[in-house]
Length: 597
Image (cartoon, rainbow, N blue to C red; front, side, top):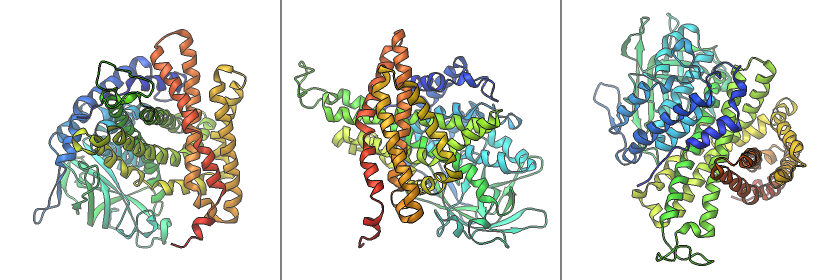
């Protein structure tokens, strides 16, 4: 049976030492982000995830969902036993309101404090976690773009968690290319719209966890221009809501079926049919993509955290198994002479896999939390220049974080299966589920290849490289600060060298992309991974700096020594991948574009 224990200690380290949240006490919402307050919150979240959500994970995977479609009634989805009760506990504990605005019943805490909760939930039960995660994204889009009347009507119940939210983009003929959507929105005399069309792959589009589901639907007005410039966004509730806030009749929408998927068996992925369903315009006509990207950018960080969460629980199980499984003797002599064989953790290749997993999870966690902090600063900081710089960082790093954390989550889950050997292929041991569940994170919210094109085609050239400066300049300053520190040399030298490689690749892309767009697009994935590796190298160098200082004080030595050993492994064994990536990038696209297929 698998196991899970939330890594509260690492969250504490990253929030209060690495990010030093106390320095932002003057920023809206951060005054309560003290270690004294956050530790019991982290511990309460960990208890819920370990004791309530995690025990349901394998059960949900085995039992799955039940779809019912009685004649004359809308389709309904029956969740596995225990999910409805777990969601009620989640709501009653106040977790949905954690970072939402106080005027709608929220607690106004910064989003950086929500990331540990989201990661724990994803580690414990990713199928469960999709519903509250999507609801929070829908809340953000409505809060930033809808009218006050719509916000007052829908947000209080969404903030409390009694209503959930979903985004409805994809159609059978329109996936990545949303300009192809056909769903129509006909204006009605009362100012509402009649929405008609089909949406597919709608996560949590129908379920029994909440009394209402608020659909954010992309659709076209009758006079809309072609392509993405003619897309508008609409709120379409499953159950109509009266002016007094009471629920009325079922809207004209139905779940026409659910997908039978490779993984996430307890998360309903729905086919939704809108037959003149009543909706209300969010924002301006034909400006739906702007509002939807508000939701999608936050969702892309959340999807990255899904990959990270699966990576963490996969690592924990692989580590525990490697310490227990006895096979063969260590090459340097028996380590457990009283036993018939040594535990497999003594073998170099097993240690390589485990350290690869730990270097990913702890480095990715630092990057995800920093992204969440920058999102907070971009929206909450009183200084406009700080808000702008933070937003530049978020825009640049969003595709990197989404792609690298989901790629890494899948790789880490695969490594867990490899460490378990034959038992990893058996359902009883649980790790094969992590491979199946995490695989879709590399696809939805924009495939990782699309993320790479976004980075290379949109983010790099933005305002003559303005976004890049938000990333390059802090690293250059950190390198300059520590270049003469002998204790930091083993971390600073590889960071500096690989920053040069990344800058070379960036300059090559800038020149090659102007001459031949295929050259930039053809190497975008390699460039995106190179960018992520340098970002993690910077993170690991900063974590090493803190660990070295703490070890001089002699407190919690095991934790900080583990940080240093993992940082060394990353610098020596993972970061050098940039050399081959640089070679692949500068080779261009000729070999692939001229190949006969």
